[in-house]
Image 1 (cartoon, rainbow, N blue to C red):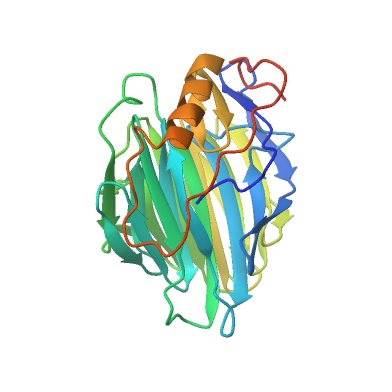
Image 2 (cartoon, rainbow, N blue to C red):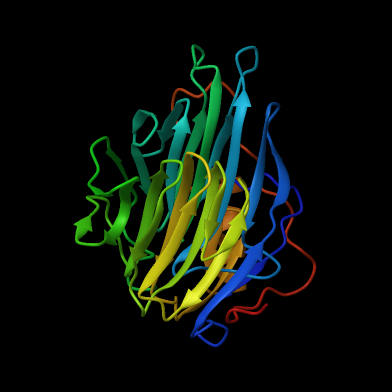
Length: 321
């Protein structure tokens, strides 16, 4: 998914200086952003109060939207570098195309994982014949320096491991959780899991104390460590936890995001993650000139044009809040 802001603000991210090295309860409110004609997303990361959670650098939550008489998601071809995109659905379908030649329909509880590496372009759209409702999340993972120039690739995993307990099914989409490991390629110590809880469930989920965590509420009524978290909002939890108390007041859907704090400093602007202004400027120029990012074949429409860079300098910093 693209950042469709026509005047995107650079996000300076990474570095361990602002990681909360103890358990906290920090509720993050979303920013509402239009995505095409019929989709509005709630942007949780980057946030004025929190830039990253582990290597997770971008989180959009959308829906559930009734798109029975609407085109649904329509995101034209656009570029990425230095990151992975994670497509995750609770309802609906998204058709993915990219410049490596990938063509894949992603359905609920299936992992669409695109590693941009040095450069890739892709589009995302609701199929012409699509389900009535669209509900999901789009997330980005920052690639560490050793892997950010790798060759681009796309993975689709329809079968994912689960962790179960009374009232809980946790689907592991990236990284590891309680001994279950996702088949998706990960480049940093990380976890992404979809948690489905039935009404009345009161449970403690095992966590890794060296990780920092956040929980995105997708649906239902839930208390996370005794904090009510409404759908479309996120609770940042800090680190130093060995378990997480969850109490479902109704059937509930959550996403658990965590990982080892991302040590490197980086710049995120538009759809690029880099380390210097020169890298961002060159990426923008390469996209405008039609080089490096390849061509997405089969999409009916023009690619996105890159917005103008801000007038001031872009500086890589740590987790400035």
